[in-house]
Image (cartoon, rainbow, N blue to C red; front, side, top):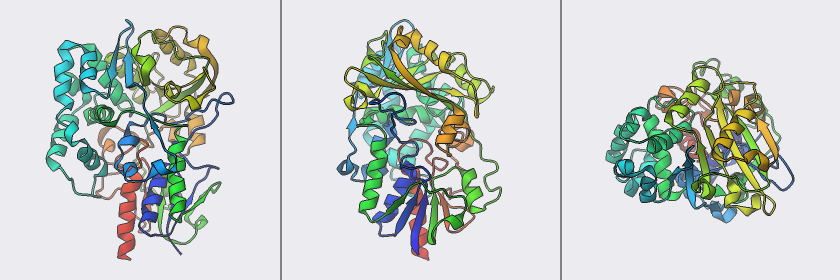
Length: 469
């Protein structure tokens, strides 16, 4: 009998498997698709030689993850690559604000009226960032806070809505860039704890940047899988799991799946009936014959580029997708241009480009024209650079990855109390009503992103249970 079986080879499932194997447990991993990866994959979606990331592409949480930093992933081929600027946010007048590794450079891009405010907001947390991020991403009940005072100060700043926090800024550049940071988790700007979301992304950039993985996000998953196999673990791909009886006998079963899928497989009934799924996304991957022709200079040097004319436009787009049930006319876009820093991603002189906008959960329309009209506002001539495009709306994303219910790449709404209390209000979110079954996906704290911390935290709960039996 195995000690543990892990179902789902996304970053969290892989991390949970590694953490258990590192501690001497016998572990097998089962994945429905023919390769590992989940939300961290790389494929030729458009033309030969153009390597795209179907989901995640830039990794501010990955490089800052306490779980990943404790593992020897560089020995297994993971290399982080940094553009000159982690992120840029252009404006219709041809200017741009930036999120730089330097707090001073970032503050200066907002203008003199907001530079000091921004520095006062982020600088107190940076000296204690490593401890803060460990405390923030390890809660709840898997570890006691190492620095409860700093964590409490962070909570005071971050738990109110982001709109409260941005009232400190006087000009639109700072407000807009910060609104864009919050929108990465598809939460309405006025929601509970959205200030913390923006602060985490800003602090992550200042601490270690927003890199891409050399060769694509698949390198993260491949490094985790290779390390797991070196630890004696077994990986089984092309293996569909419809019920617990499909799996070999084990003392514990750990699921990197949506809560509703787990309930169906493990026979947990309506345990997660109240769990909410959030907006979907419409994703485009481009093969380009040259770099994106941004009007502003700063986006040409950035790995990630946010697209939204101002904070009001971003808020309108988020409300349309999350509350009004319609696709926005001017979608807020998150874009990544990996080939700015990674020449392995496209043939010489060519580029890959990644973009998505928010749409209602399960939406079946085509957002391509709206996305490209937005891009043309800030990069005139963009369409002329397109050699090929691959599009994926909510149905296609859900078909590729069963965790993306209705196209929700966060595996559950990141709004209201569900931002922190996932998948339901309990001090033990990784455990289930079945004593041998655990959940480790992004539906558990600390939530979405390629960081492995949900898997790390769940593995702690599992090995504590195994040592008691």
